[in-house]
Length: 222
Image 1 (cartoon, one colour):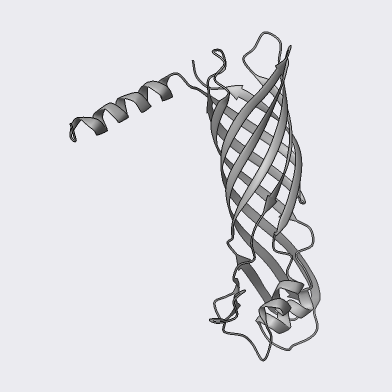
Image 2 (cartoon, helix red, strand yellow):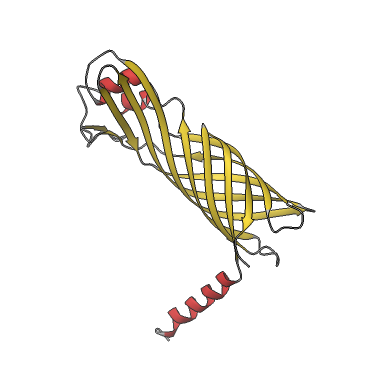
């Protein structure tokens, strides 16, 4: 029985997955700043099974990553001068558990609960002063979302409007591995007498982030 149990479980999982239909999602819009995303989901579109599983990735371009001069003092050196250039980037990976709540004619409403990983980079450069550096963090987070999707006539595809909110606990801030700061303050390697609170206050790493995007959800199988 112990040998056959994994085989039975595997067979049941394979049977369940074979009944699901894969979809791709392409979306763009507001994601805390400017964002775009890709996703692949598995769902059962015809027999009324209300849940779906989705893997998702997103890229966010951040216009203002923080105070460049203060970040330089906290992470690099005490130098001054140079014309500031700065921007931030996020690379997000998400696993969504979705619930197709209700359908009204060609419009349906769904909700998602997400586990998240976000790799964040704040880029700072001082042109004419030969100084450039990147502050990074990589928090795990959670998110909730909702979407309204509208069936496109004579196709298995949908127009999608979605929004939601994400939360990322504070995590280590690092620049070139030379000086870094952690929320517990116990294993940081600070520059001068700076603290994690100082570092966090000058770098706009994601903590609470909301999004509102439009996209297309289209069938890639069956």
